[in-house]
Length: 154
Image (cartoon, rainbow, N blue to C red; front, side, top):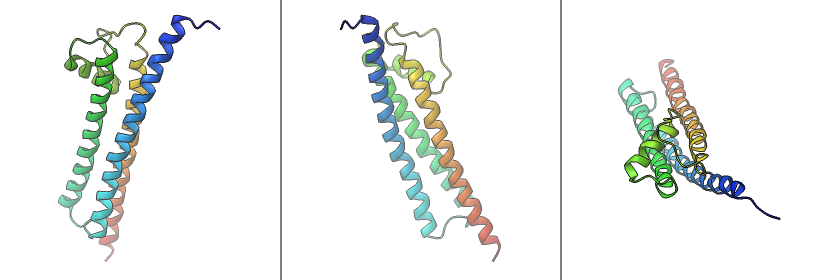
């Protein structure tokens, strides 16, 4: 069985992109677990729904942790682009990664034809990670609202 170069060119970026996606999933899971642990700890201390400013601090802290996770994930993808995408420096690879991860895109920064598949893979990864982040932040805000409303009944 003869494997053509085109098949190899499509398979290797798919493997690399899948590995990068798995890394970002684990990083994001760790960050979101940290957020949920923090909110749970604040709940046990009786601080949820206690005051507007404390609730704002909890939401802001949660958003900042998630944002930091997204930045680290962009760095991971930037490292992949730097290693395999033939960017001359990491700053250019990081910028390209940020454009893909946020689905903004930039046709002026094209990878070689064999590595172009990484762009859509990173965009899909970014969309999924932003979706999961949105769900967790929504859950945090919902929990704060429930605690606030329960507190106003007394």
